Amino acid sequence: MGLFDFARKIGKKLFGDDDDPAEKIQEHIEQSNPGVDNLQVEVNDGVATIKGDAQSPGALEKAILMAGNAMGIEEVKADEATVAGAQAQLGSDDEFYIIEKGDSLWKIAANAYGNGAKYEAIFEANREVIEDPDKIFPGQKIRIPKDI
Image 1: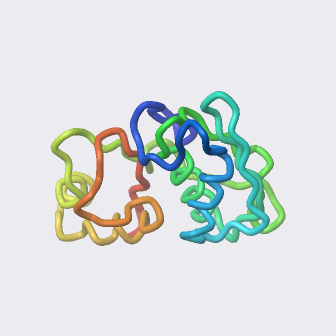
Image 2: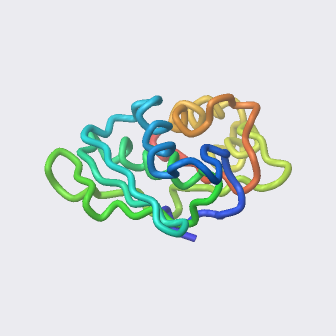
Image 3: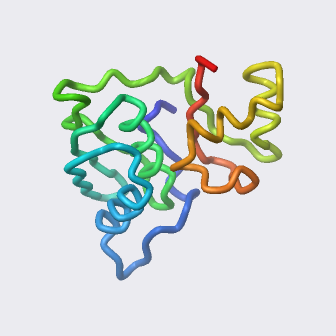
């Protein structure tokens, strides 16, 4: 499962049957403002497509994670999104982690860094994706920063 693949039946419930998924996901991303200007979101059969101008690769990654961690989304495409006017160079799969049952940010940090107290670095890198460090869920995909 790469950065752009998600568990469709798991995630934050952002929209219902009568809602426009694209509109709700776009509102969700814009509310946290990860750094993507001119954001446009389209959703078709569980696939979200993000377009816009990201201020950094990390900003685009956050927007992708925010869209993909929404219930009902199984894939995110960002082929037309740009970073400072150029195609984005995104992180590799090993920089992302799918939360498993029984995980905590402390446990994830202990495994990633050898020190659970560094969980705050993971939380800060995912502030737009994780609203509360005590409220993560199995199947949620997060970014694990390498340079802390």
